[in-house]
Length: 195
Image (tube, rainbow, N blue to C red; front, top):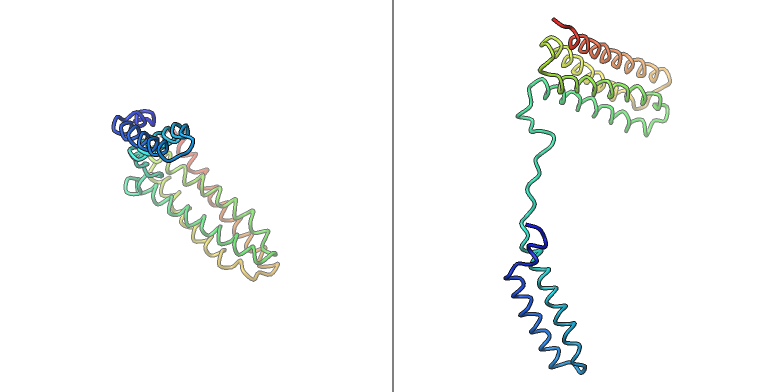
């Protein structure tokens, strides 16, 4: 029902008329200028009608949960999302650690590239799972799992770095990104292969 339908509810209108009229009668009897009874009576009537309309509204329908319930997802999609979540959490840990270690700033761009590559790879499984051969899906899940493990390892080594350690971390992240991009190329090849 719309608000106007609720506003024209006969019970609410009846209560508004009775209470507005009562307020007008009391005001006319008590107030020195009796003409004040009209706006006060109308004001009370409008207030009662609006409050009744607002209170009688039905609640909004419950929103459907998004993203879809994990129980309805194919196992490969759920696995890809779990590994992507681990990679994103490790990247967030790297970013937080870099806030206290200014020398670690060079680690941030390669960590972001890893997250982007992992997202593209996880999306390829989630969106094209039915079209992917089983071997390609397994390649994606394995690449994401390894990348999540390596990102977690880099996240633990960011704090307190020296310049030489920073270059090692940047190289490690570059290798993780390269591995994910290689897996993405393999998935694209599997999708375009007519076999």
